[in-house]
Amino acid sequence: MKCIDVIYGGKVYILIFKYASGFCEIQEKNNQFNIQLVHVSKLELKSG
Image 1: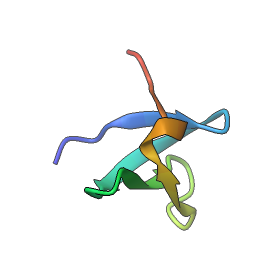
Image 2 (image 1 turned 135 degrees about the horizontal axis):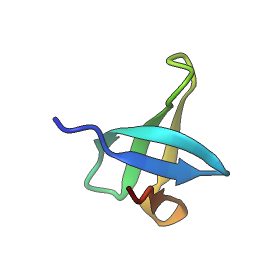
Image 3 (image 1 turned 180 degrees about the vertical axis):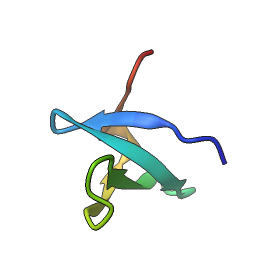
Image 4 (image 1 turned 120 degrees about the vertical axis):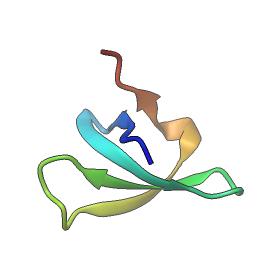
């Protein structure tokens, strides 16, 4: 799977998995131990 960078709470995360419910697992780019479950509506795609 291609890495997709997203922004959540002013930090850059990598999208790990998107569930059918609209929730996503995201991992902080510089901290592999920080994984969060958030709704896709709270994310924005990182351009570039």
